[in-house]
Length: 169
Image (cartoon, rainbow, N blue to C red; front, side, top):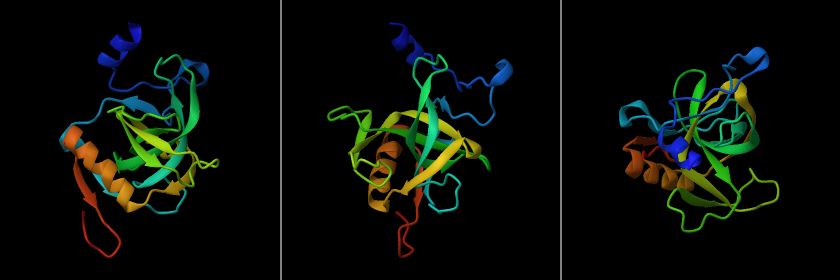
């Protein structure tokens, strides 16, 4: 019951507490999905050691229980909030077939064991550029566009996806 209520009344942001009990400004945090006017889904991967839309990066993601525990995991960056933070969705290798909150991505170089992955479209995270552990891979534009279209239908977010060759999706 507590888990259900916690998800219904999810705070705008949940900060990870660092040393001395102070919130860490560079922590990855779960946030409510932004309003349609607050997020534009873009595809701008650049191999530059910064989290960019269209990339799968690794960061420490807090568990749903919000008890200070979490794990290092891959997330798909879908857009930029500001100069330091990006919006992202977590990935899982646990099969989620038939779950409307997950889209199958298949396998890719972000998983060293080659396992298929699913992206969770229900939980949105803010990743600070200093909270990114490493770049994992660039998600191809076709799979990214499929995720972006599902997010656009679900949340009303606009897409601005440059596909190779200069066309916009």
